[in-house]
Length: 276
Image 1 (cartoon, rainbow, N blue to C red):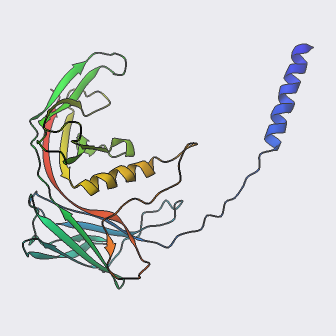
Image 2 (cartoon, rainbow, N blue to C red; image 1 turned 180 degrees about the vertical axis):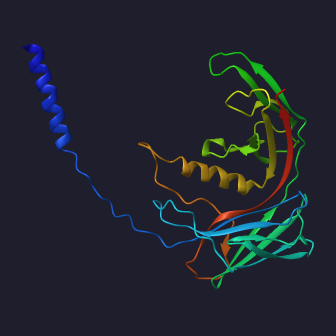
């Protein structure tokens, strides 16, 4: 009898709790679409590239609408200029008359729907990659058995260098929010960086790991950090959303049309290794 009464009490408690749950529909106001910019110029001898789209409502899971018919131009600190042509909806590519180089400074101007936006960036110095090595690890705490790729290379003397590491496995970029790797040289200035692991899951025979090291401007480093923080700002302990910095400026005084995103200059150094 005691067990039955306890069971009955639990059922009644569960019923009482469930009856108190109400669905609350929250009317979230939709903000006006903003211009979203994602562009770059590198030291790899390729023309500048810019993607333009519009932001959309948070719960809208369709692809962002591209911005067509914009006018884009690029100049560098040596007086060279280029016009970026629309090669597909919202995708703009330069002709190559402005090329990225270490120490170069670049200004992108965009005219979109009667508004003029501008972004400035630079291409900074870069170290080399010595090698990507492999280490076999037996099954142990924190590791599954298999091969792990390791980054090895120097860091240039002088605080103020910032990097992004892009890792590919068999040609596919690790591109989830948790895969973003950015770092500064504040704690490792001028040291040799060896044995930094590039993959969480073990590699098998035939796998190829490639790493691209991008030497990026300081402000772009903080942009990537802030963007990642906002993407991962979910759950019970999420904080109030905050605007992510941008180097896209509307040049027209008094205009309320702002933009988001970044136009960045950077170097690219790459190396790879194949598990035999």
